[in-house]
Length: 272
Image 1 (cartoon, one colour):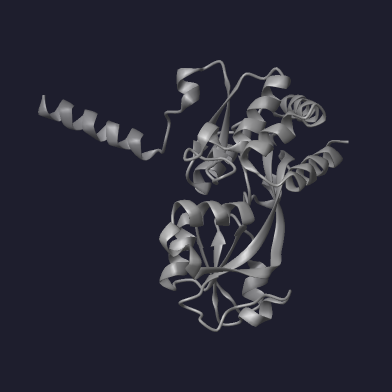
Image 2 (cartoon, rainbow, N blue to C red):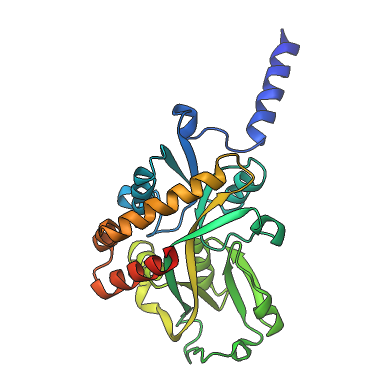
């Protein structure tokens, strides 16, 4: 009996070690599961209704007549695992860090174009830091990069790189482990208001934008339903952009109507 119990314990531990296997699709097996990287305020378990891009994706899937459920995961490695190893049909995120070979096997459809800026922590750099388009000004400093982000240009400029999740990067910035980070404007506002409210005045944003990046939905061509679903979703997204639902959803989260209109126009241009 003891031997049997030990064997059962051993196999249970092995199953647990393979990674997260329980998801919403386990409960709803007929639904198409979408894996999204947690990135507040765009998509997150910490934001009402899962965030604005969660709502956008749900609306587009509904128009496309695709019965989908979105599972939000905290780690970039988990999203990448489901795409490349489990052949998941769809993932959503920014900076997926896919290999050239993997990029050939996905159809990327942008949901939102983010403007990123560099941030630094003023108590660690009382003289200030300023970016004017050349990374050489940061030579000898350490950059906090998002998981999956391409960092070759920093290494070429003799800037050390440390990777992590956004919350971790803010903490590293505050502790001095990294000197500067790059995050979307919306993310910076959300984290400072919700995670660092008592110290948000100590964080400074550099004026010159660091980069523009898309938060996209990726359909896996290695999945039997990937190609057809990508076309259906694109048509669904086109519909909600044209009928104003896309802008209406964004307007619930973004108070600047010019930003909402710019995003709608950008997506509409892609979908033509």
